[in-house]
Length: 222
Length: 149
Image 1 (tube, one colour):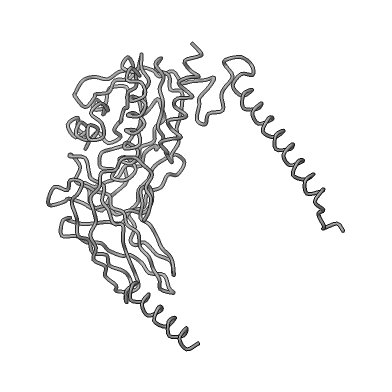
Image 2: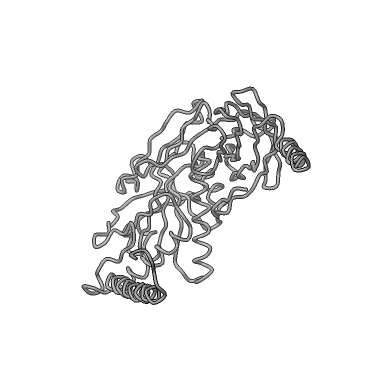
């Protein structure tokens, strides 16, 4: 008796399931919207990696770009920046990440050509990554990407203040050493504040969605 | 009944031939085109081991490269690492893909330019003595997720 389901009961179960389903959906939608609006505009949206309400204001630094020109904190102002740290002799992780950043950059620029966005590849291997090597490397992925190196040991770098890890490890010969390095992509806002860490593994659609959501949120904060 | 038996036998024989006598198979070999300033390439491929025991890939060679190493990429605590490996073990009755961010080949110092569309001969040497020659295609990576064939 317990295990027989009469036609009437079956219909009841379906209706009950439907009602419960609707309630769950409603509750979900409510939670979703409240995440964005509760507590006014400054409430932190649920975006993985978002440093809010404490974005990190970057201090002064002085790097050299792949054209040989100085690149300082002022070059971060007035536009959004995607930063990735790596080195040109890294054949697997770095090119894969840069190819993904190229896709993100191109799709965002395609949607809005006036979008002020720059992609920065910061070398953790200035000994091998001369400005010329960096130039050929970043421009292979996109003519507009910017390669940066810290060639002046006296100059204040960016790696130190962002806590970027870079450790040289022996290769099979002295010249093919590897550099372990932070794999995350960082988003810096137009006020030169580091606002997001996008942790590896990187997926183009996910990174693009998070970037758009974060840009919208930060822009609303004024 | 005898007919069915024969058919099954023929089918079995045919499939053995299709998969080859050696057993190990490798395909989908490709190298990523390298930026102009770079002489080290990353290579990927799929290996299938139908043997009832594990087999190791122990060496890879090519007339186009000075030397080739096996490496493993990983991200630990947010830090990307790459370490040379002596071998890659393909478990019994299994397939293994060398793919971006995981096991891959590192190919050093090409003797000729390798733009996308080039073909590179490779030879894989395994611990059971099997040798597989195959051709890798040079492709330009475009950031899309890679699918295995």
